[in-house]
Image 1 (tube, rainbow, N blue to C red):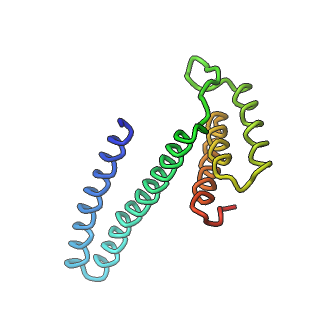
Image 2 (cartoon, rainbow, N blue to C red; image 1 turned 45 degrees about the vertical axis):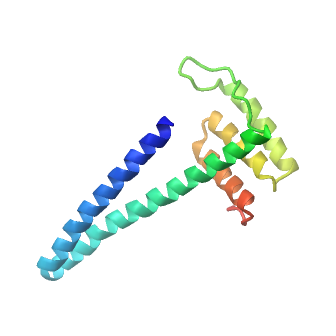
Length: 150
């Protein structure tokens, strides 16, 4: 629940930022001639981009949360039992071994979103966040019946 509160506060801050920046952009566009219109248009683009990115990330987070709950109900959510270093990160050798298992599962059934979800968790345990997000996007797309990203 704490993560949801933090996300809610951050989204609210981005919305306030977008509104304030949008007001300044409109003020620039109405008083400044050609230069003001150009600057105002540029400034107006910033909150639009910010809101789009926040929306996409929120949608991704909600989708992965939904998949995680589904796996938990089905009893397919993997147990987090990897040995940990003092920093809290999984030990590398154990994470690599778990990753190899998850990759083999995906190779056996590449169309199963559940296996891609578990592979994403294994990527994260191994410290590869970029590939973890990519595998999670694939899991979301497969579950939704869409063509997954390559």
